[in-house]
Every structure is written in structure tokens, then in C-alpha cells.
Length: 360
Ligand SMILES: *Cc1c(COP(=O)(O)O)cnc(C)c1O
Image 1 (cartoon, helix red, strand yellow):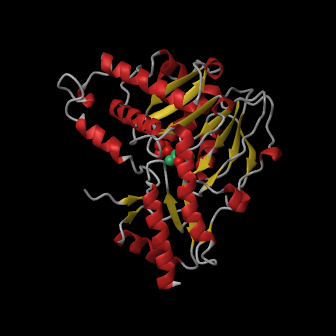
Image 2 (cartoon, protein in one colour; image 1 turned 30 degrees about the horizontal axis):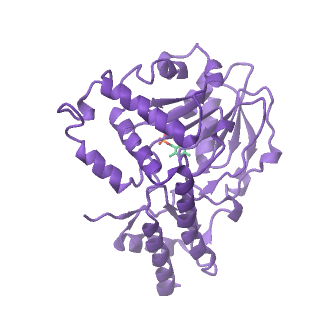
Image 3 (cartoon, protein in one colour; image 1 turned 90 degrees about the horizontal axis):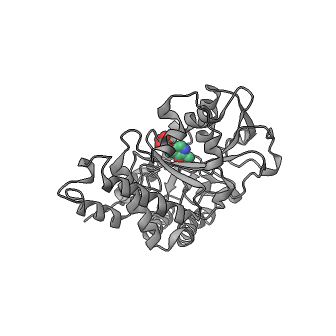
């Protein structure tokens, strides 16, 4: 069966093994029913949730002080839920601005309460990341919010703020499970599924019990984290199939050797492409300053836009998909998430060399 080299930024490539498994159980998961046809109140679904939560916490090396919540609405809904649950007239939310998604999170918080900027790299057009030592965070802030990987621009944090008294919250939508982090430094992090965790539909929130206690009670039930925590994410009908797919992806990550092995592979994959960029004599120009480059979203520009368009067109003829940069940035972007095979990156590196030979 033909499988394209899929470099889409999200929804993105899924492991072929997982797709095959899902196909095997598509019509009959158990008892002559598809999981999509089952009641979310059934034992099967309850067990699926508990197992998925356990596997995720084990992969992340977190203890039972953390809870895994499943919801819908994507990371964008978290942009609203975080401030709704945690801001109060006396406590602001502190935001590190490092790219367009972090800016969206900040703007959403402003519609709900007081949000301030702890640091920003906007004046450098997001081509760098704010230095963590220059943060200005109110020690009384309700939280500090960081986007660990900037999907659109192609940058990724390696240092994280340590403001002892202030809970750290991470939008990890585009790099959760792609690398090892000190996850226990975070009071909460979230990710919508469609980059590294599965198909679109489900969003994962991992939250520490202390932060859960700090959530307000004055907001609608369906938007309160406590509702999800108290009902094992079964207060209303959750996206069951999407969560089932996530479980298959988590098991696949385990079979690869866990996050440590996945990370090694991701570094090799990204470096195949960065090496071509850096050795191209300026033909391909990385958009992000080297120390801040993302291992997930590799972005670059070429000398003129016509050539960039031609690159995208030709790449499609050669069996690649998803390489056009985000409309707000332009240029090219290869999203090499966990499920993108090493061979796909190798093929792309060779295509880039060949393209330069032909048009350079
Ligand atoms: C994709 C993405 C989002 C938006 O996710 P939705 O599920 O579409 O709401 C937010 N933040 C980051 C870092 C992303 O990569």
C-alpha cells in the first residue's frame, strides 16, 4: 500500500502499526461492537480511560499526584480554560511569548482576566526565544504559561523558568512525548492529540493535585477542571475513539523504548534536515537561531518565493506532503513528529540536495 512521506504540521502522520491495529478493531472491538458504538458508561470505555491514563503517567515518569484528564476543544480551548479556572481579580496570569500560539493563549487570557507578559521574542520576529533569566514574573501570579515548542515558527525551549512560588503551565501540543523533560517541574501541561498523540478530537491535560485545588468554582461546570477530575473525564460524552487511538499510540511509544529512545531518533531525524540547510551555502536558510531550533518543526526559507513555491510543487510530485510553511511565516516547514519515519527524513534530505543541484 502506498504511504506518502507525510510532513504535515497537524493533523499529522500516525504510526502505520497503529492504523493497522485500529483497522483490525474498527468493526468489532469487543462483543460485536465497535468502540465508536459503545456507551461511554460501559466497563470497556472506563477501563480504556484508566489504562490510557496509567500508560501516559508511566511514560512521563509522573506519580499519582498528577491526574490525566481527557477533553475536547483542542489546545485552543485550554487557552480559555486555564485563565477561567485560575485567574482572580487579585492574581494575574504571566505569559512567555515565543510564537503565534503563545500569543493566542495570552490574548485569550486577556478576555477573561489580567494577563501580563513575562518575556517576549516578538520584536525579533520570533526567530529567537526569550532568555529565562530575564523573566519578569510577579511572585503572586496565578501561573506562568509557556509554549514548549513553537509549531508555526519552528523553535523549542530547552530551558524552563523556575519561579518557585508560581505554578508552571505548558502548552506541549507539538512536542509532548517527543523528548524527555522534567515534567514534575510543571503544575500542568496540555496537548491536543493531532500532532504527537493521535488523531484530532481529544485533548490531554495533565494536572497536579495542588493546582486542581486552586481552581475556582464560579465558572460553568463543563469548563471546570475539577469536573473532569471528579468524573474520570466522563461527565459528558468524551471523544472515545480518539482516546482509543491515543492509547494505541502510547503503546507504540512504549514499544519504541519510551520517550528516551524516541528522543534519540527525533534528534537524528531533525539533524538530517538541519545538516542539509547548514551545508547548503545559504541556499536554504534556517529561520530560527541555532540554539533554539525545534526537533519537531524544521523551518527554512529560500532566496525567492517563486523558488519556495516550486520546491513545494516538486516535493509533491516526489511523494512528500505538508512542506509549505505556515501562511503567517512563509517559506518551508517539515514537521517531523514521532510517527514520521527516519527514512522519510532521509528521503527529504536527499530531495533537498537534489533540488539544489537542479535549481541552485
Ligand atoms: C496546534 C497547536 C495549537 C492549536 O491546537 P488546536 O487543537 O487546533 O486548538 C496550540 N498550541 C500549539 C503549540 C500547537 O501546536
